Length: 232
Image (cartoon, rainbow, N blue to C red):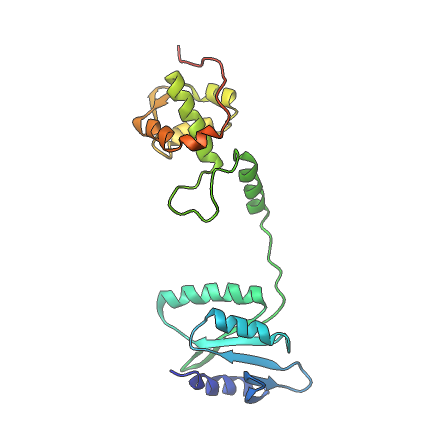
C-alpha cells in the first residue's frame, strides 16, 4: 500500500458528510471544508510514527480539527497499538482515523484534553515518596530491582532478625516503626522469612544473602537501636 491509496477512501468518507475535499493544499495531505466551519486537515502515513504525530501537531497552528490517518491492521497486536495510539492522540488533541477496504473508522476526534486525576494513585505516589528512606535508586535503572519503601521495611526487619535471631511481628512493628511488619513477615514476598513457631519468625538464608546484596541500601538507613526483642 502507498500513502496515495489512503486518499480516495478518506475523501469519500468526508464528502459523504458534506465536505468539499482537496489534496496537497499548502503541504497538507488533505483539506476538507464545509460551509463556514474551520477547515479539517488530515495527514496520511503508512504507520503511526513520531514524524506523523509531529506533522499533525504542526498543522494545529492552522486549525484545531486535525486528524492523522493510517492503514488499519489486524489481530490483537493492532488492537493494542490502536488503543495506545488513541490515548496518545487524545493527549495531543489530534484525531485518529484508520483506513480499510470497507471504509474509514474514526477512533478519536480532535479536541482539548484534560487528564482525569485519580486521587488514589496520587495518594499512593505521595505515600511511597514519604515512606521511602533516602533516594536509593537511580532514575532509569533496569539491572537492579527497584528499592521501594516496602523493600526497605523488609530489609530493616531482616537486619533486626539477623541481630536478634527471632522476633514477633507486633513487637518488631512497634520498635522499628514498620506498621506492616506482620504482613511483610506473613506474606514473605521475597522469601526471606520463616515462621518457626506460632507468631515467631526468623531469617532464612535468602534473607541473609539480601543483607549482603543490599548492604549499600542499609548503610543509608537508620540503624536499629531497639531494645532486645528476642523471643523468650
